[in-house]
Amino acid sequence: MEVSIETTNDGSNTLYVKEINEHYHSIKGALTESQHIFINCGLKEIQNDKIDIFEVGFGTGLNAILTLLNGKSKHISYTTIEKFPLPLEIISRINYSSIFNEEEYSLYRQLHEVQWDEYIEINRDFKLRKINSDLTTHSFSDNYDLVYFDAFSPEKQPEMWKEEIFNKIFNCLRPGGVLVTYCAKGEIRRRMQKVGFTVERLAGPPNGKREILRARKPY
Image (cartoon, rainbow, N blue to C red):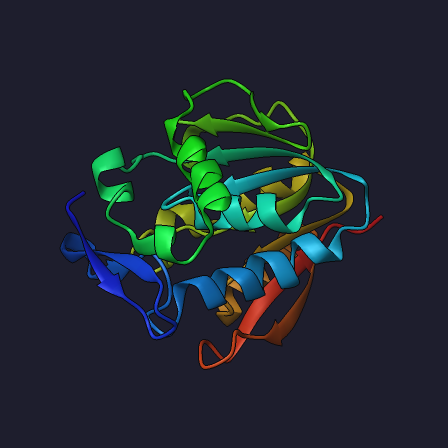
């Protein structure tokens, strides 16, 4: 996919895909959106000292670096699936070097530079596995405590939001496991509920979407 870089309202960059008329993050604030949805409403909801995370859509790696930086008291195993990895040339042009300090940005670059399809230890508390594949054909072999569902919107990638996808994710989550996503559409909520999730609407990020969804697998 051909992408261009745009600056969002909080000063952080996002990417725009012209062929599908879609941004990777909210134009009202890429960093603000990721922090609110995936960290504040996701990572901080999990009380375990050891957390297994599955991310749908590695993208710019923003969710991954925020998880690494905000989960320092945890032992995190982070798996992410991405069908269209971004080239390092694009990554180097995103302005995260001005948002994160030198050490943090070095870790961010490392997330992108490590090889795909095997677990890599980034530091003693965070290991990463990037899977270059398609979620619709992916077979889960591990169990997770938390899922970041950050695919493109249902209008742009309807195949990623089908009931069968949520059923696969439900089955790979441990009891009490959580899924968070920016999408709050009623039809998506009903699909999650149909496969067994308990779903709640939460306030969206400041100056962003009005609501987001957090789903939980019952104990």
